[in-house]
Length: 254
Ligand code: G
Ligand code: G
Ligand code: MN
Ligand code: NA
Image 1 (tube, rainbow, N blue to C red):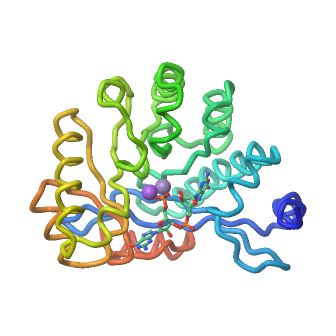
Image 2: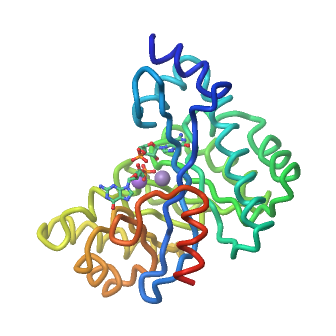
């Protein structure tokens, strides 16, 4: 409850911010995008992880406000980077389950894009697999509306949510993000390598682009590239960076 009250004031007190983790082309070392990651620095609790406060925000009804703030801030940052003459790459924001279920989400996002003069293909949405499996029919319709806006769509944490293959085929998505739990113990864990290969085979056969999360070593890069994964993100390349440090990273890499 204390966290909940703190969270209620977090936006007006300017305690939220976004960091950007580069998404890399593994073979060329170029930045092809970024994932926006929400951070809350509470004066009472210090740094609180979104893994902890997003579920609280969902439960107490604050997620609408916070989710809107994230999309707004990401678009404002894209506008700032464009004005500064930086090379633009698509920026991905994570959606929470309740945010995704809102009927007016496409309209809301369209209005924000318009406000900041951001093209729809510069914004990407990351949805977790578990958000899509509960009610796959409704998910197909909701995804289609977002896709029609021209947004890029990714399935995050892929491999952890038990998607049925028949639905995966019908989701109008662009990228599968291989969950970092499978990447972490490559090359030591042969089960994880087998699972990763199976995910790659499935994604490829469905015409999806694959991106690996949690890439921390050169060995992992070699395994991934050797098996056809051309994109990745992780501490091997960069931690989540503030906007201007991210822009400097892009300028250096690209
Ligand atoms: O960046 P970090 O490892 O602390 O993220 C922890 C979890 O919080 C991850 O699952 C990530 O997807 C999620 N997360 C980060 N930023 C956001 C956000 O803006 N919205 C939502 N819904 N989840 C986020
Ligand atoms: O659920 P999602 O994939 O959105 O979670 C992203 C989270 O993963 C972020 O909190 C980010 O800080 C974290 N992360 C990003 N790269 C790495 C990495 O290479 N290793 C680890 N352990 N975590 C990472
Ligand atoms: Mn994500
Ligand atoms: Na993930």
